[in-house]
Amino acid sequence: MLDEIVVNETLKEEALEINLKDLSTLITQLRKLRRKYEDELHKKEITVYEELAESLFELRSSKLLEGLEIKGFDSKFLDIINLMKKIYVNFISGKYFTQEDKILCYVKSSFSINNKTLNPGDLILLSLSQVLALITLDYIIPLEVE
Image (cartoon, rainbow, N blue to C red; front, side, top):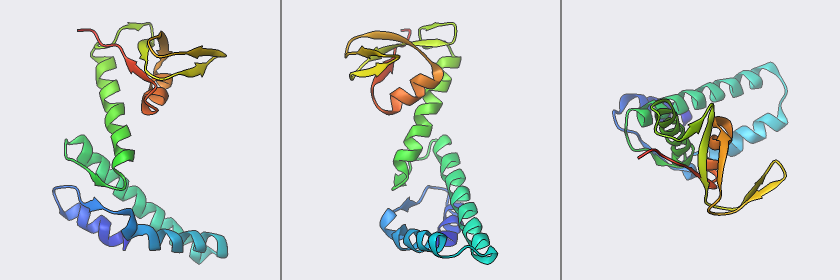
């Protein structure tokens, strides 16, 4: 099943719509296989499925980066990649207010960092890794130069 999806994704120019429902039986079988068997043959089988899953991820990621719309269960995973791309481009191209390697951000939702609680409307300088983590949780908005 997974091999067929990888082949179809490779052959089609557009991204397929992959439903988790279609993969749920395979996922359940592989989970059971991981728990039940420890021999080399089954470990190699699992490795093949892991490689297929990685290939599918790479195919769909490349299509996303080429600007194609991704539909299906993995669209949220790939939305994060698109967000990372946006932050990368904006950071490198000077679109954000920065100080050294930190980005000035507007706080959208309350959160705590370094034993300090921030509330909506607050401004904070955050490292790139903090921005990546907090923006995916929808806690912050990096401020852009107009």
